[in-house]
Amino acid sequence: MAPVRFRVGKRTIEPFSIAPWAEEKCPKGTPPILKALRGDFFCAPFGGNEVPYKTEKHPPHGESANARWRFKSLQQVSSGIALNLSLRTKIRPGKIEKSIQLRHGHTAIYCQHVLSGMSGPMNLGHHAMLRFPDYPGSGHISTSPIEFGQVAPRALEDPAQGGYSSLSSGASFSHLDCVPSRFGGSVDVSRYPARRGFEDLLMVVHAGRGKLAWTAVTFPNERYVWFSLKDPSVLQSTIFWISNGGRHYAPWNGRHINVMGLEDVTSYFHYGLKESAGKNPLIRRGFHTHIKLDTKKDLIINYIMGVAAIPPDFQEVKSIQTTRGGITLTSPSGRTAHARINLDFLNSIPNET
Image (cartoon, rainbow, N blue to C red; front, side, top):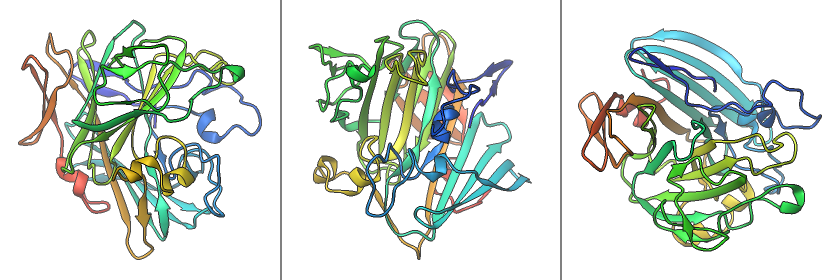
């Protein structure tokens, strides 16, 4: 889903990234999702899926990210407009219904996916990728309170294959501004772009079991903030994929820069279904890395992404509170920004408008 353009006042904001090779011809066998890499896409199962799970061998990020969806309708609803699509999955037979809704007067996208007819464990999530302005620290990243944070346990890249990483594999942390580096000391991953020439991945588990968890990126000079909203009982974690020119093999060739994936998931990092369904270290800590599907009960994943204008001196989001008709985003200095949001959507039933 990209490009996406938000109208904020008299400005048009286009926050999502599009890979530089997205319109190029890729080698035969390149997964469709990598050919068109851009914006946000829904993953089921999430991750590389390099190792089969029992008899299931899924493509990277699942059929939901690679197969051709069937158009159902583009309809006017009381609140705005809704695009409805569906997909019959084959590797694990079942059905996924997709609805993307826009609402009058809201600078937000409302996404709903409904999985039906499937059984067994499934790790899943959204894979939003933002493009940051090309100067150091142009974006300030923050999240709702973190219960646990960890750099990907296995090395993300192999220098022998032309890939380079900067963070300490498997290192744990509790704050984004103090993440262990493989070169010693720590780095601040809440300011980006940074660390040009490296590719890194880490994950945070949101604290508590409340009804709202969030991730936000403030662009102070550009005077806007991007945010995602979710129910943490459905999507428990957020993966940070920090892509700043650390891959020198095709089709990346060192040119995928200033991009950060902020991927809201229930998964064991980016590895895939087998690792997420097994007894991994996060499950032993009491966290969820998959959801058990039941053919008798649909699984509904609701998700909101949006933008809002911010006042001068608004550096990053410290908190997001619900207010009448929307949300209030507050900075550490007490400056506030507002967005019209229908938070009831996060708990809505399929096709509820």
